[in-house]
Image 1 (cartoon, rainbow, N blue to C red):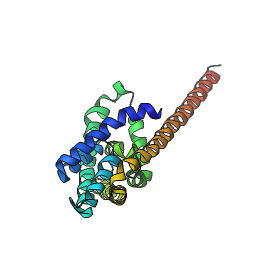
Image 2 (cartoon, helix red, strand yellow; image 1 turned 180 degrees about the vertical axis):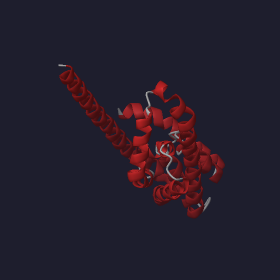
Image 3 (cartoon, rainbow, N blue to C red; image 1 turned 90 degrees about the horizontal axis):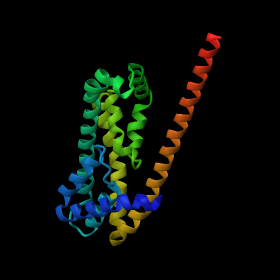
Length: 218
């Protein structure tokens, strides 16, 4: 499993390093914006290498964190807009094609109204999930400015931590990047477990529903 994931992520890591090395701060922006717009470019490689460049004096810690955070926010706005307007044009008008019912959208609205603040804030500090959380927030029509504040508040600690680690370890940033892959693996495993649990619950409810219908027919 780790070898498969490494074969997928390593070319992205090498690409991120080249972009940041060649372009500097604009390169950080170009990588961190898509990373929050559902394109899984690893922020670990981008910001750890940026921290290494901070240690060499190429730019300041503040500049690296500010650019990375702003880029994450812009990328999140894009994904949010896709979810917000895609809901209207795609899910509400053609939801039957995707087996999405109005009740499903209503459930998403209720869930985000209750848990959305915590989900958006804390997910910004979780690998993998942070890349995609803006899309369902848009689908659920979370208020835009609340989404913006929570996204920025969640982005800054993650980006600051990665940049500080990169600055502290200097030329050893690549070794830390490899260690952080294990966090990705753990999060991926938790996502798979969560999907399995949700599927089992749905399957059991479906079975109980069929049993109730059969009992009524009898």
